[in-house]
Image (cartoon, rainbow, N blue to C red; front, top):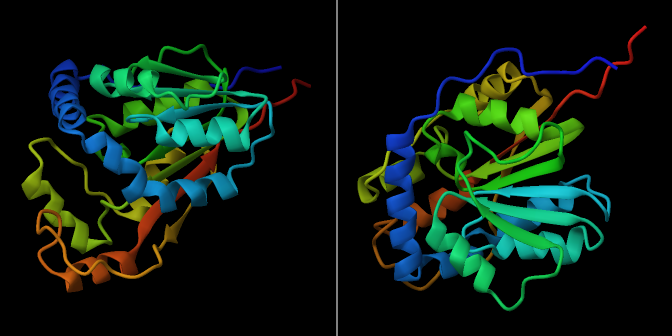
Length: 248
């Protein structure tokens, strides 16, 4: 069988940018922000879980897992006979994840960044990532790493609210002291195709339910903004590493 590789090698990682991100996310973990991620992102996770073509014995990588709420859900509900690995660049987040008493036996966590994943080539069946890809300093390098560690035929699902077509999320940059990429859906499709993926496409995930009675004003300045943000929805991008090609 011919071994498939990503079309071009990734550029060198940017340690300074990743160090800045680590400091920020470590701070969020110490402030208790990690505990709020399940509440804010659960609708994205449930949508991904419903579409993930996983069997009960597959290995899933939760890329930028935070305190591990989605990692645990996947391990217990989707692949009880498989394995789920949660990876985050923040040691503080990983410490929280490892300390959680609800961790199933088929879960493990590791500190790593998306440009240097500590896994062998072709060792992962599926990759999921929620509200994190826009933080990655070199998104192309991250895409190549995802391609490298996925098995031929493996899939990825990346979800995010911060993207070009949702202007109601753009103000987040004024509240965060880190760089954020703001690409459009077609730009992301092009990026992942350039990394070697096939069947790349996108869809929207829109959160349903009543609006809160009031907001704290940090992420949105009015309920109308929050309503518009929800109506625009999140971007879900998915794709597949090509299956192995039989040599003739």
